[in-house]
Amino acid sequence: MNQPLFVGPPPSAPAHLSQHQIDQSHPLGPGEYFAETGRGFTASELGIADSGVPYGSPPGTAPVPKTVYPTTHPPDEPYLQSSNAATYDTWSHGIDNPPVWTYGGGVQVVYPRGRRSSKVGWE
Image 1 (cartoon, rainbow, N blue to C red):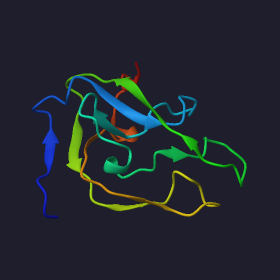
Image 2: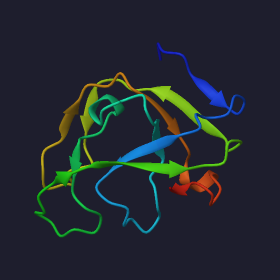
Image 3: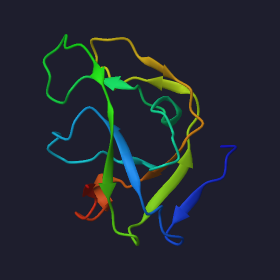
Image 4: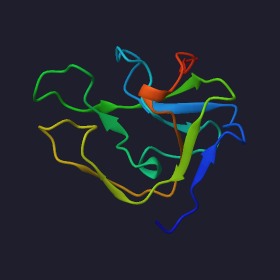
């Protein structure tokens, strides 16, 4: 690693977070990676494609554009904050489509599903 790593709290995570998602239909709710709303990070800067295959789609489904959705979280929820390197997104388009190159450079907050409260959700 050659970038700073921050673990919190303290300080509290940014007050307004969002996610790049296809829709809000995933049965587990929001994913684990969030970006500060208003910072303007593109999906590519966050290490993911700007499109993806909807959850539960049959093989061969074409990717569709993602939308930025606001999310909720308690201010004292433990999190990890990191920046993103350029990488291939190997999961957004499923196994039937090639990986997508992403540019990195964004900052994200991570709330692992197995360790977060049920108060992390869609706004």
